[in-house]
Image (cartoon, rainbow, N blue to C red):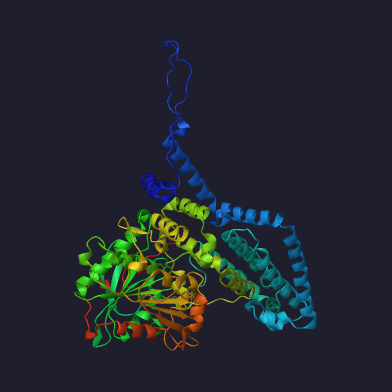
Length: 623
C-alpha cells in the first residue's frame, strides 16, 4: 500500500483507535532562560517523544518490524505462545503433587503400551488411528513405536489441563503439543515406517525418486511457478465447475449477483438468495453437476440467486464489515426486488456468509430498520449453513485467536492491505495438520504417490484474500468480543439483536466441523425467539453441506423448536432429535415449500451483464 492508504488504515484500525490512548503532553519546568527576568521560568516545548506524531511513528515502525519478522514464526504470535507456555509452566511448578502424578502416569502409559505389544493385543488401538492401520504396524518393532506415540498423545491430553490455567492457554498448550507429536510421529520417519520401507523395496527406490519430484513440484506451486506435472483434470470454473446455466444480473465493486435459469415450468413464489462465505469462491455450492446445490434447487422448482464475491486487492484495504453488509447483502437484495417485485425472499447464508446474513436479518427486523429499507424485499425465512452467531466456543480456530495474535495479523495486513489467500489456507491446513500436511506429505514424498484433485479439492485450492480492515473488524467484533451474541454489534450506528428476528429459521450444522463446531452453531437456539428447525448432519464443514441426495453413508438429525421453546443443552438435543438416513437437502426443500405462498410460472432470467459464472470468480492471485 502507499503511505496514504497505510495512514488511513491505521486511523480506522480498531488496534489503533481503541487500544491505544492519545498521548498526554507534559509541560516540563525548565531553568531560567538567558535574559529572562529573575524568578520567571520559561516553558519548554513538549518533549518530541511524547507527541501524538511520535507515538504514531513508533507504532508504524513496530508494525513494520512485526510484519517483517512474522514469517519466522509462521505468522504465529510469539507473545501468545509465550504466555500460554508461561501459564502452563508456572502452574506445573506450583503443583508438585500433580507433577508427581503426571510422572507416574507417564510410566504407567509406557508400561501399558509395552505390555499390549508383548501380548499382541494392540491391534485394535493402532487400527483406530488411520496412520497405523496397515497390518505391518501391528508387528515388532513397529508396534512398540506406534503405541508409544499414542501413549504420549494421551499423556499430553492430561498434562495440558492444569488447575488454575486459563481455558485458552490450556487449549493452546494442548494444541501445540499435538502439533509436535504429529510431526514426530513414526509414520513420518522413513526408517520407522514399514509401509515406506516395503514400497521402497518393491519399487527399488523409485518411490523416493518420484517423491523428490513431488517435493520440487510442491515448492514450485508454493512460489507461483508453473507446476512440473499439471493435474490430469484441472477443474476450472465455467469449464468443469460452476456449470449451472444463469447470468450475472447485478454487479458492484464487491459482488456479482447471479440468477440461475429455471428448469421447471413452475417455481416457488419466493426466490432463494444465497450468501456464501467470502473466504473462498462461491462455487462450493455449484461444483460438478451431480453435487451442485444450486442445480438441485433449480431442479426442485426454486428461483435461485447467489453472490460471487470479488477477490480484493491492495486498493480494497479499507473495505469494512459495513461495506460487506451494504454491498454484499442489502444492495443485492435491492437488485432482487427489482427483478422479482412484490415477493419476499428466502435468504440463505453459508459459513461467514451466514454470520453476515444473520446481522442483516437482525438489522431488518429491528424497529426503524435500515437506511433506505423501502428498496429492500421482506425476508420470508432465514437459512444458516455451518454459520456461527455465538463465538464463545469457536473450536480449533479459537486456538489461534487472541489479542496478541490479532494484533500481529493486523501488522501483517497493514503491509499489503490484505491477508493473502495462501496465509489463510495455511492456517486451515495447520489446524488439520495430521491429515492435510503430514499424512499427505508422507504419501507424496515417501511413497511417491501423486494425489489427483477432485472438484472439492480444486475449489479448496482456489483461495481468496481478506481486506485488512474488514478482517480485523471480524476477528475483533465476533471472535474476541462476541458482539453479535451480546447484542452489541452495530449496523448503521445502532446495535442489533438476533432476538428481533421473527422469520422462521432453518439452521444446519455438521458433526465434524472444526471451523464452526456444531455445539457453537447450536447456540443460536439461545439467541432467537422464533421457530427454529435445527439439523445436525454427519461430515465436516464442507462435505457435510455438499451432501447431495444419493451420496453414500449420509445421515442427519432434525428437530423443530417452536416459538419460545425452552432451552435444551446440545447433547440432550442430539439424543432426542429425529434421526434420518440420507441427505438433508430434501428436508430443507420441504421446509422451503412449507413456508412458501405457493407456485408461480417460472421466471425467465434477464439479459444481465454476462453468463454465469461471471467475471469475479476467475480473479486469482499468486501471493
